[in-house]
Amino acid sequence: EAFVLSFPIPSPLNNIFDRSSLFAYRMLFRMLFKVKRAEVSLKLAWRQSVNLDRTIVRMRRDEQDTLAFRDVAQIAYRVGLELTHFVNNLRSYLVTEVTEAAWAKLMAAIGTCTSFDEIREAHQQYLEQLKLYTLLHSECAAMKHSVDVILKLTRRYCSAQSMLTALVERNQGDVFAIKEEYQNIADEYHREISMLMSTLEEQHLNFDFLNFLLLRLNFNNFYHDTNDHTNTEF
Image (cartoon, rainbow, N blue to C red; front, side):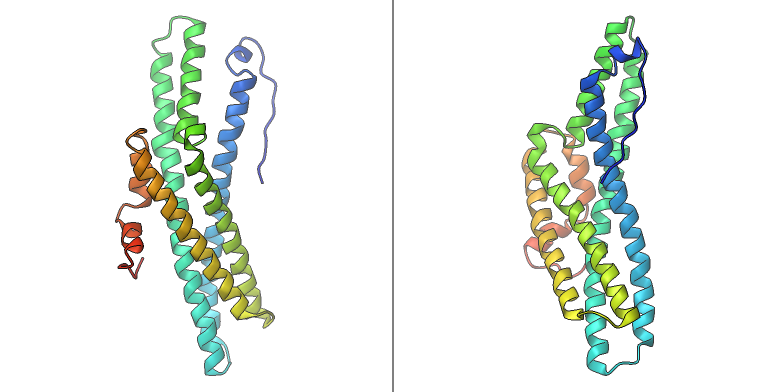
């Protein structure tokens, strides 16, 4: 689920990296680790999809079975694209708009500090900005919940991909059960992404930084079109 690095912090740095700061860093690292894990898992699932397409073409089955496998592979491909789009853009937002921007602001602030207390204050402001922009602040709890749910859905999707791969390669399993799992994942994803988009649009007036996340996740208004039932392609 996560990993933790522990090391001693000598004086006077322990006055900056105190217990509350380390707790904040632990939350931040956990968030970034979950996103990175989802990104790596989806890349593996993509390679599995490519191999599945080639294997299904070579399968010696009757036409009905072949169509069933192609149908479930198509659903898997579509769901994988949407999850990959979400995870990649979330990671890009966290790295570019959040961590790099906050770090540059911290370095600029430290350059003007004239006392240790000012450095400590600049570091605290840096952590507060990171917690807010990564949705770890209490006022962003609803958005954070949707993000967590979608990240868990990527794990379910990757597990389904592994099951489908085993089914095709070993001829063991129920293709219709796997198809139902993919459809359930797709339905849950669209439900969560719709709630997330609605919340982002409502809250971006209060938190201007949410514009960056909203733009990345819905840059082509795909999810607006989906809600209107007019969009059939991703």
